[in-house]
Image (cartoon, rainbow, N blue to C red; front, side, top):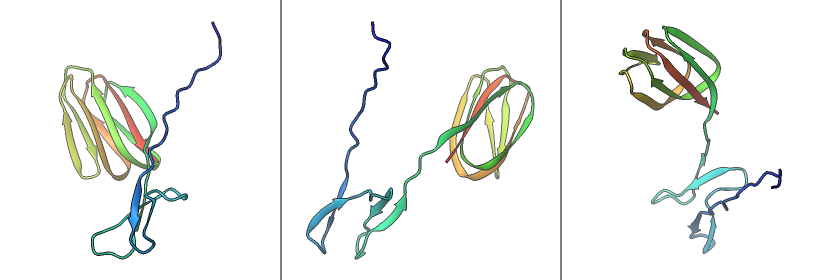
Length: 128
């Protein structure tokens, strides 16, 4: 048996749009990572920055806690492993997660949140 690591690679799908000015198909994602989107009635494609969120912090707890983050976060997930409700306050949102339930959401940029309750939980935040 070999100790070498085996990696499987899936080829990335190429997406194209039709450029009426040059009568050719061009890649939808440019070499700088910007996605081009052509709106109906527009003469040129808009450019949209494609970002992917990665897990930035993971923690667990059993009591009320407030978390502050040095950089902007955009995603939050929690699993309520206990027997009591948890209340999450994030931006202007108040979210109740019942015992045994999970929550996963995307938000505008945030740098803090509060988890209120006395129930065992596992949580994480995602950012750029």
